[in-house]
Length: 122
Image (cartoon, rainbow, N blue to C red):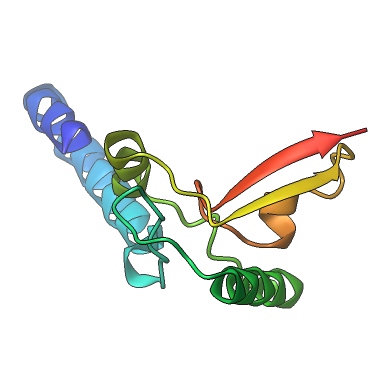
């Protein structure tokens, strides 16, 4: 919305061809956004506790998406980040992992922000 307001204020000073370009870019970006994609809900303090079996299943599903090259964790939207700030995070799993940056656990388990608590040890 802020971008649209800025563009509309500036439109009185820009030629129509440039405004058409901005409109096309804005439309293209909205098509590329995660809105049409499957987006998993982030866990917050408002969610009930999760059974260990369910948490393990989420990790397995996430790893399968990572292996298949179809991650969801990278499709985070601003509303989800605001939920974590406003409602607090509620990780379903704590993992002690290697400090090696080549194996980021959030990536290989395709988790959403706030899903897992990771402690990296050398």
